[in-house]
Length: 57
Image (cartoon, rainbow, N blue to C red; front, side, top):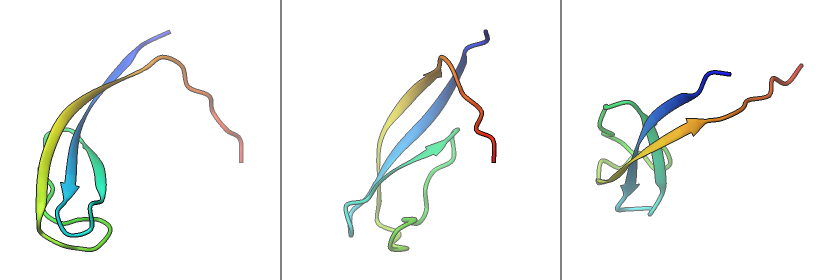
């Protein structure tokens, strides 16, 4: 079983208080909820995937 570590950047919109995560190193330019460009950088989160289950459609 392989273990995958994903780096997520946390951002917060100053207008609507929406918290959101983006993978990798890009910076957020607009809020996905309200479209505001007032974005604050929060932190980096490292997520380790231990087990995944595939769902059949």
